[in-house]
Image (cartoon, rainbow, N blue to C red; front, side, top):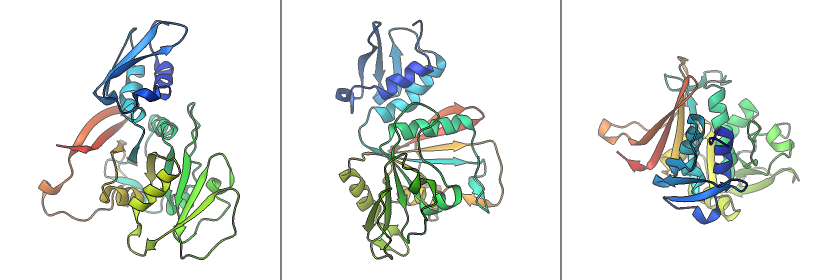
Length: 283
């Protein structure tokens, strides 16, 4: 091996020794047949190798290192147009961002223990929420469906390709038990929905510690308002939609001094630009 390429870098990300989780710096050997090692600093944002790392390989290490080196986090993700829309008014969102961003999403899924979406996302898009574009394990699929609107013809409830948990209002009408998914009833208020801190606790009781909140915009916004995110990935595509569904649903502020200004890293994903926002660090 003359350099650490993209494929090798992904193997490094998915093979980080457990003893290094939570470390801000460290090193380890990743190739048993050759004496090749890597070193990371700044909680996985900086990487060097005992042999050269290709530009694509370094991109993978820098982008996913901060996630792979922690055993517990909540990350949100949004793919939007230049004018801040995630879909048209009718809900068409295939695809706002490009194939490179879709690959990024699959990589984050592979690192995550669970992926959360709201009922509207399932009803509109019928997603699988699995890892298909790269090697990796499928996360548990967590569907927020307070009023049990989702029927069993949707793929997340019938394909059995991943563990599935449906969260519903504990006072909603009951349905027949299914062997395809776990049904969990929680308190739910009409305006704010579920108590998200309670929801996170329920998931972590089930061993789901790395949580990706994938959509839609309302679900991501509620987690954001509850200040539960460690990071958020916002990918911006060179596209203008006009009237449509906004990325965020947030209360108005009176002054820009109240605006959230998190630490930000930028990555090019084909024609798109990813803003990796660390919400635990504010500028």
